[in-house]
Image (cartoon, rainbow, N blue to C red; front, side, top):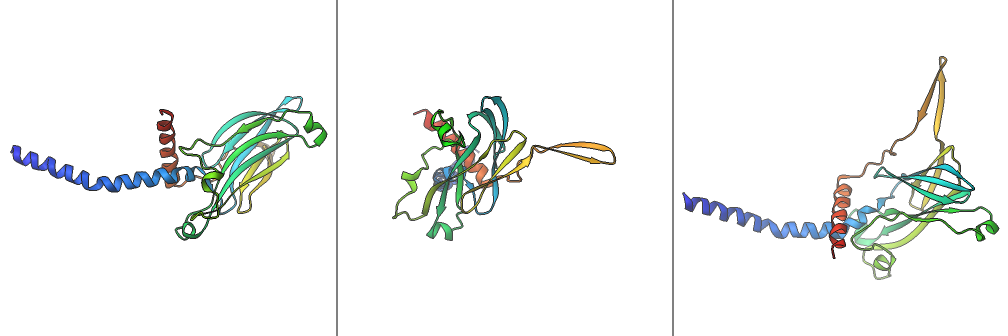
Length: 229
């Protein structure tokens, strides 16, 4: 009986040992690609953010930024009569394209700006870092260079518009950069004498794929581990 139990444990350990190299390869691959999946795809026009404003007086505003596809919201104080949103893009080439890799984009910075140059010179800019934490820096020194086997280009793009407190600004990613469309923050419809107030709070129908969910989660774990050292 004891011999049978011992043989059973040996078989179990052999199975675990057999699959260990495969597991290590999967974890290594996931660790390498996780920061790239923090970037969102931009192979078609999809919402990357929604920006809304509340006036605080004297050209100060509270900007509410909802990220897609995470559907998380954070608020930032900005100064100016216009807002600007910057993003970083990575485009692939060669083998990466043949393997089905899709170009990626991530929000980089939110800032306030003034329409008039003279006024802008007298004001201190308000800047907010929107970049997510990654376990290694996915930046131009990492991916740039003519000898890169996978990366075609790493570049930044911006969009800016006048601040309007009665509008929701939807920012979209495209192959060429960023674009933005404004919508009323609330719509009032009337039918048969009944008035209806519609408040749009959707997440842009941009749910992340299962691979992106797993990659983002693993990236968070790696960032936590890195913080210990």
